[in-house]
Amino acid sequence: AGVAVALNFPAKKVAWHGRGDYLCSVAPAGNSQAVLVHQLARGASQSPFRRNRGRAVAAAFHPARPFFFVATAQAVRVYDLSKQALAKKLLGGGGVATCLAIHPSGDHVLVGAEDRRLAWYDLDLSTKPYRALRHHAAAVRAAAFHPRLPLFASAGADAAAHVFHGRVFADLMQNALVVPLRALRGHGRAASGEGVTDVAFHPAQPWLFTAGADGDALLFVNP
Image 1: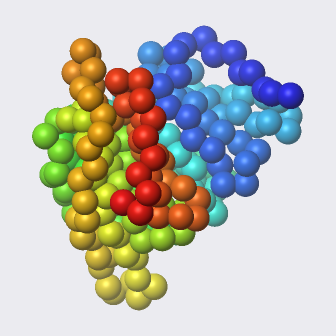
Image 2 (image 1 turned 60 degrees about the vertical axis):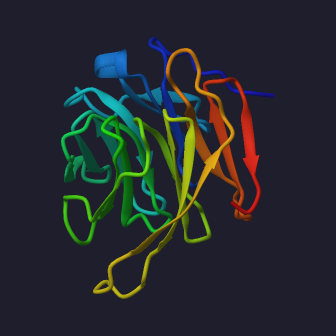
């Protein structure tokens, strides 16, 4: 058995809540219906906002708290769903945002952009990026944290995926340690100019799955 959700606009991004009953979809052309939250148990969908401030490009749930992240072209807004209010606004660096990833702790955020930059935000430190990583030769298209290991990855229109060591410390006075590890190549660049369009880690192993505009899905073992 499966579940089908009919949308009025093409969805570009989807993300699951950690408990599995909710997922969100992002349809940038959807205006007031650009961001929808779907609950499987009730079989219902709703728009959490009366209107969207900016063109939504990605959304994600906090892994433990009732916070909801929405990335628009120029900023990331963090909403407190229990209070139905804006909790924080993360400021962009000038490039148009393309993707969003939340650390398993919920306290760190990755935002990729058209200007080839992958920004790491420490929510306890500042609303501006803690680190700006420029390892892609074209726009960043996707980013992901490993759910258990201190790893994260990015995918770019340059047909490359990059893997980083990213260690978060329990001591709030100690900044996250970010170290580039390896560039992974294997996808061709499609006629549209796109390369790697998405990345995802295995839930337990240090393995990375990549999806390309060339129509291939690759698995990199122990990248």
